[in-house]
Structure formats: structure tokens, C-alpha cells
Image 1: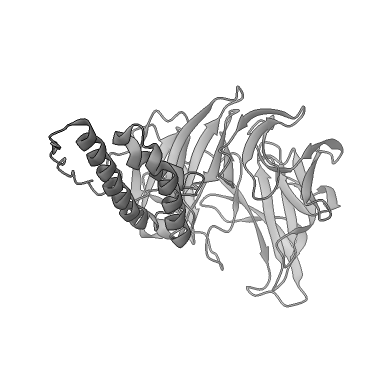
Image 2: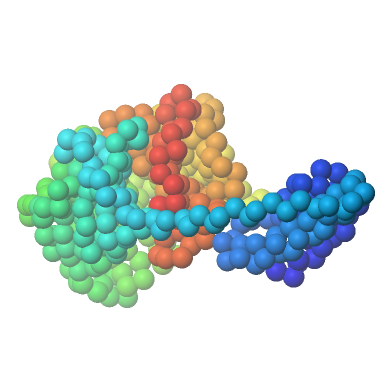
Length: 400
């Protein structure tokens, strides 16, 4: 704050003799003093106080000029505008009016974190889905947003309970399959695996039915474990990753769901997969240069290409990818086969997440909102839907 006051004083001293259009002097000085600073909502009351000082100083300048122009030193006083109260934001009230099968993106209401809202991919319809206290803890939707789940439950958009999976962890323990009616998960014999680890089993579950064992693959341990990167009924495969204590992938396996056969495997670092496991992006970080590169593998494990930076997600058809130059840098959407950048995100907003449009070519990209600091469990973020032509729809703003 002292730096900001010093900057404002310096700018005021420089511009006091250059008022020119004195009516806008206060605004010009405030803009000049705050240009290039990242907005912090906690500072704005103080900045507003400094702004009042500037306005008062500008008013003195106006008075001097007016007195100089009018021999009788008459100063005209203008009445101050009546302040208008800003209404407090309220949760979304109208219901989401679309057929139950229409794909939507679900999100927690920005005002009431126990309310679930939804919006169509083109932004033409949005509204309240329902209220559930569990939503405040989190949720995981299936690709079309027709079902969502968290600890021990799966519900439809009408709020009906459709399944109560047995779980021993918080959160939704599975990875939704691309058909939206199945999910893959990893289990082991012990609720708390021993330090040395124990074998893990890939399971496939149809919503509301008992899980089926697919294959023994990966391991579970107290400081490491296995997870499902992608699950595809359409392609009859899942990608299982073994994670070390730091969260990085140690090895991954491509498993055929119908037979449990291991199609191919590879020791690896950080990976991202397409929704059907057809494309696997392996991210490598060079500590000497501080830069990342991504190797993209085909369904059979052959190298398809290299990409600069980090590939974070793929569109449903696999033609587009979400790319970052480095971990904290801005995000873009590219045609990864030729490297063409079709959309660039805000330069001051980092990547948060992405979701492919089911059955389509568009991809929803979520970026952190640089104007609003994190106050709860998740940082506020903005969502853009990017199409294959590079056109982006700003779909959601300041949601968690």
C-alpha cells in the first residue's frame, strides 16, 4: 500500500502542472498510478480512499483555473449524484429447461455452493439443476452431465438417487466411461494398503450394478497408488496409471476391458489421455532449460508426434488439444498434428481444467480468474468453449 501511495504521489507531482483537461485530472492520475498492477479486491477500499484525495486535488486545480478565467472568482457548485445501492447477488433461480438427455456442463452456483447449476454447450440455456448439501464438497459429472456423483452416491439431473456405490474414500472413486453409464475404478484388498504395497485390480461398473473385475494391474500402497486415466466403452479400453508418492506417473498400462488383456505398457512420467485412450500424451520436463515437451502415442504405442510445452487435454474426437508453454503460463488450443494454434487464452490466466464436448469437436477450457483471488476450496475460474474454427464462447465467469 505504501508503494501504491508513493506511485500516486509521484504521478500527481508530475501531472499537477500538466492538468490540461482538468475535468478528468483525477481519473488520469489514478489510472497512471495503478497501470500494470494486478487487481486485488482487498486493496480497493484503500485505493478508493486515495482516489478521493486525488479528486480533491483535482477539484482544487479546477477551482484555480476557474478563478483565473473569471474575474469575479465565481465557482459553480454542481450537486453530487445520489448513490445507488448495488443489490446483493442471488443464486440462480430459474430451472434448467432442457431435455434430460441434452449434454450440459454442471457447475456449483457462485452464490450458493450447495446448489448445482447447468449450462448447455452453446450457452443458449442455463439454470438451476437442484440443491444438495453434498455438492458443496464436490462432484464429478459424466461426460454429458446427465449423472453426477460424489462420496457414496450417483444422482441424475432431477436429483434422484440412482446408485449408492460402496466406497472407502471421499469423493467419486471412479473415472466415468465415455458412454456415461459405466465407470472404471481401482481397488485393492486392504482399505489401508501396507507400506510395501499390494496388487490392485481394475473394475468396470455399470451404474446401479455390482462391479466386475477386469484385470489385476498396478499396485496400491500407503504413499502411492493406481488410478484410471481414461475409460472407454466405445474403444473397449482403459488406461491405468501407477502413481508415485509425488503424484507423477511411474508406469501406465492400456487394458482391454472385455478381456483384461494388457495391450501395451510403458514406464512413464506425467501423462494425459484422450477420453477413449486412443491418444496418450507423455509430458517431459527439462530441468536445465525449464521447458516441457510432450510425446504423443498412438493406440498401439507408436510415437505420433512431438509438441512443445504441455498437452493437458484432448477434444472428444482427438483432433484438438489444450496446450501450455509451461506449467504456469497461458493456455491455448491447438491442432496438435500440425501445431496450428487456433485459440489463445487470456495472457494473465493460468490453466485449470478442460472437458471435451461429448460426440463433438468443441472443448471447454477452464482458466483461473486473475481478477478474483481464491477464497474457498477452489480458485474462481472462467470457462470458454472453443470450436475447431477457433471461435470461443465465454460460457461461465467466476465459478468454482
